[in-house]
Length: 281
Ligand code: AMP
Image (cartoon, rainbow, N blue to C red):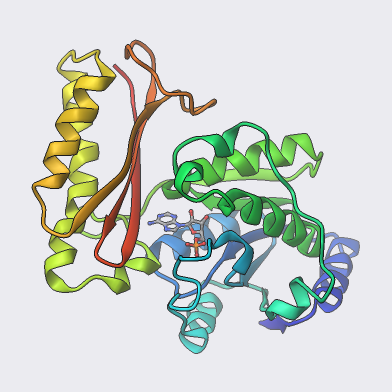
């Protein structure tokens, strides 16, 4: 497995692979890998002849008071896991390689970031759109796999791919969960045992919302307020948002009569956690 630390080495390798008739799938990550990340790699490996994984904790997608400096990392372990998934190359740049002195180009989307996580993380999707565009230009993949756990991110990347004509096959992969339902996340490492119990409020909220819709509840507000009290009954939780929205535009809905996205973000102790489910009435 090749490990590239510079954009030029990475791109040279990708170009030579393409010249040799290979296709490239790509899984970008911030490392501290778990089974969610590994499921994306399996999907990627099944799509193309060569899988490339990147590990880069992207500073521009973190706000000033967020957890950039605390973000967990274990590169040696990550590299072993990636190798075991059969990846042909890892792109492992440092911050200076991606954002050298006098860096000044950023990508912003007009509408999608004005919802859900974008409301409390105003620079987040600008950072995501910028790093993903740069990685696409460096790795030049044919296909790229992203997790549905970050549903808004997946929609942002699909939009970016269309708007900027990257021509990459963007694949969404299902949320991978612990056996009790908690969506896997590198940030789960921040939870102490009591907070780990409180974190279950997110996946349980998704199931409850689904049950309410399936039982005929049409009022999005009724569901939002029921779920808010449910989450607040768990210690050490602070609701950031509970959204019932159109899955494509992310506009909030009032009456549920077509498929909706139920999505939420909750601060549990130090960890800001997210989860979501698509629900058909
Ligand atoms: P991150 O390292 O958190 O930036 O995530 C890298 C990729 O893994 C993103 O496409 C995420 O959506 C995806 N991912 C993270 N957690 C999960 C999960 N529990 N299930 C599926 N995909 C995930």
